[in-house]
View (cartoon, rainbow, N blue to C red):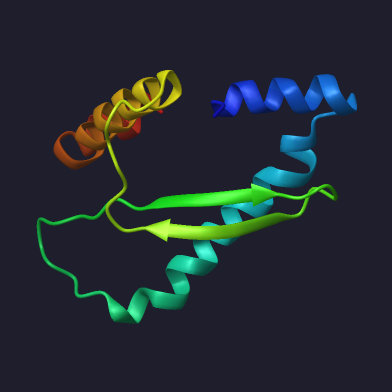
Length: 108
């Protein structure tokens, strides 16, 4: 398991160009947006509530990105050194957005 920065560095070293920016970033954004749009009418809006989703994506040899699954309650345990780092960031960012949205937005 790699962090995004580790994957970007690997792709740059392996292929000699910025595969993430040129091929994968927009694909990943589109997959997430399309998935959420496709089920938006199935969710009940509850004031003061939010939900966290985990998207598992795969990249093939031609740099096509594929959705493997969406987790509606992703694991937030420290199962690997990468997940330990990412979970801490996600939890901190979630608090910033949920509790202190106005200030989090200004810092971005």
